[in-house]
Length: 127
Image 1 (tube, one colour):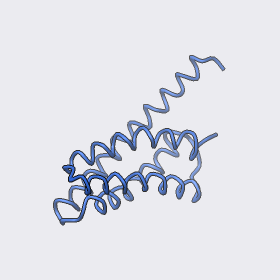
Image 2: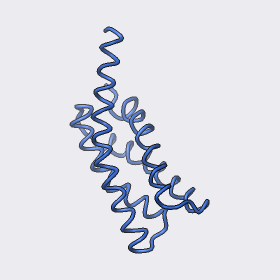
Image 3: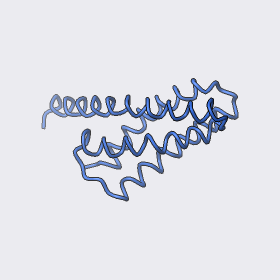
C-alpha cells in the first residue's frame, strides 16, 4: 500500500474521530459545568461523571462511524478504563493546583483527543 494512501486513510479516520470528539466534548462540558458550578461537585468527580456519560457516546459512535468495528465488552472496558484514568487525574490535578474549571476542561479535551485517538487506533479498534 502506498504511503499517500495510508496517510489519506489516517487523515480521514482522524477527521471522523475529531467530529465525534466535538459532539462528545460538548456533552462532557455541559455535564461537567452543571455538576461543578450548578451542584458544587469537585472538579475531579464532576469530570469523572461527565466523562463516563460522554465516553459511552464516543465509544459506540466511533466504533461504528470512525473505525467501522464491532463493539465488545472488552473493548468498551479497555477504552473507558484508560480514558477514565486520564479524566480523573486531569480533574485531580485541576483540584490540587486550583486550576480554573474551564482550563481543566480545555486541557482534558486536548489530551483526550490526541491520546484517545492513539489508544483507539492502536489498541481498542486495531484491525
